[in-house]
Length: 176
Image (tube, rainbow, N blue to C red; front, side, top):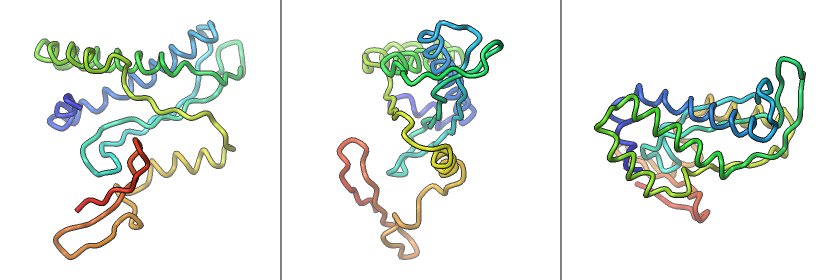
């Protein structure tokens, strides 16, 4: 949380989110399968807001449950080391930010490692759906507005009241 301000001040830094997503997913896959020529497919979508509409840049990623390579057309993989993903994403993201921001970021980078000893939050679900459902899921993130009209409770011309469900406890919260 304490480094989101960097992304707010310089939106070009948001591009940094994509490389850690790709690298950590690919290395996780490589560690499991042990074939350097076999890589998963993935789609990443950047969101700059959370359910509460506050500044919260994050990545939504779909990762294939298998991969293809130079000599293998397809090999399934249904296991991902989510603990590894948490640590790998944190490391690559912080290294890329340190490279972009320079020495002024190093103190904060060290503090982030202390504040997040278990890595960054990675919410992952196994694929329990058909390709059609997966396409609908990713399409929702590619083309949806910041807030669905169904979540807007009132608008008086000056202010908006809306609701959302928190991930942490699944409680509905109303914001004005």
